[in-house]
Length: 429
Image 1: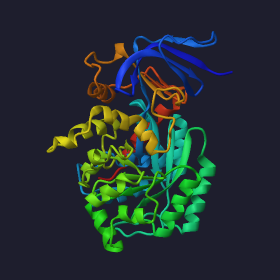
Image 2 (image 1 turned 30 degrees about the horizontal axis):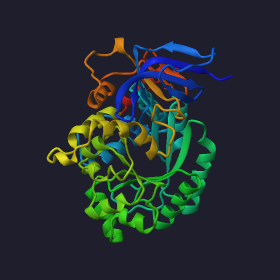
Image 3 (image 1 turned 135 degrees about the horizontal axis):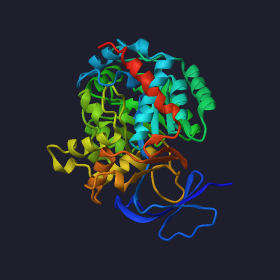
Image 4 (image 1 turned 180 degrees about the vertical axis):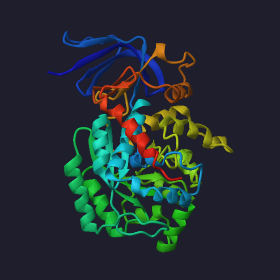
C-alpha cells in the first residue's frame, strides 16, 4: 500500500521566481505527485496542516570527497602542495574504518544542513557507500580510475584500461540501487591517457550517466598538461569528442578565452567549488561567461580545502566573490539557488531531483517558522541566508523521514560522532 502525505497550506520554493509561495504538496511513496492550491486527495492520505512550515527541495552537493573529512581545518588557506603534504602525513588514518567514520561524519553533517544528494568522488567506494546507505542520502558515486600521472606529487592509483573498465562495471553491479548511482571518473586530465578517457566516456554513454574529472584546477595543472600535450585539457577532451553531455568537469578555475568558447558549445556539465578554489589559489571559474550556455552545480570539494564544508556557505561566497571588481560578472542569488538544487542534480545526471514539482523525487527539507529567526523576507538572497543560517527541522529523502525535530531517525548515526572525535585526535599537524 502506498504511503500518501499531503502538506496542506505550506510555503514552498517556486523555482521560476525563486520565491516562496503558498500551496499544497501531495506525495505518494518516493515521488511528488501533485503540487498546487486546494488539492483534493483520497481518504487514506495523511494530511499535515503545514501553514507554519517552509519547504525547499533538498540541496545537492555535487562534488565531495567524503573521506577527507579527517583533514578538516588542518590548514589555513594554502597552496595545493602544502595541502597534499598535510594529507600524506595522515594517510594511515584513511584505513577502511577511518574512511567510513569520516564519510559518515561528512554526509551526516551535510544532511543536517539540508543536503539530501551528494556527488561522492572516490577510488575506494565500499565504505563511502556504506556510510551513504546508513544515512539514507541520495548519492552518485564518481568511481575514480586512472592509468597515468603527468603531474607533480603523489600519483593516483593506476590500472590498465581493461581493469579500470572492469572495476567500474563491478562497482556498478555491487552498489547501484534506488538511492545510489555509480558513474565512471578519473582524477583529472593528467591521470588518464586518451584510451582510458575514451573508454570511460563510452561507459558513461552506455550507462546513461557522466564521466567525471577534475579539470583545469589552477594554472599549475593547466601548464603541466600543456607541456605534455601541447594543448589545454579542455581542447584535448574536445578533440577526443568526449566533451559533451556525458561529461561533467569539476573546477574549471583556470580557463582561457578559447577554453570558454569550447565549453559554451560542448554540452558538458560543470561543478563549481568556489571556496576550495580560493583556498588553494587555483583561480575563479568564470560563471557569468558560461551560465547561459552550460549547466552548473555547486560542490564543497574536500574538508582540507574547505574547512566549513558547508554548501550554502559556498553559495554565499560565490554571491559576493564573483564580480568583485566587475559588476557584469556578478551571479544572482536566484541563480545560486538553482545551482544548489536542480542545477546540481543535473550535473550528476539526476533529472528528477532538486525541484518541488510533480514527478520529482520527494526530497524535501522543512523549516518550522517558530524555530527560525524572524529576520527572513521573501527574496532570493534572504532565502539563501535562511538556508545558510538555519537547520531544517525535518529532512525527507525519497519520501522517507531522515531527520525529525532536528535529530536523525536512525540513532546509530549520532553515535559516529564519538568515533570521529577519537579519529581526529590522531591527526598530525
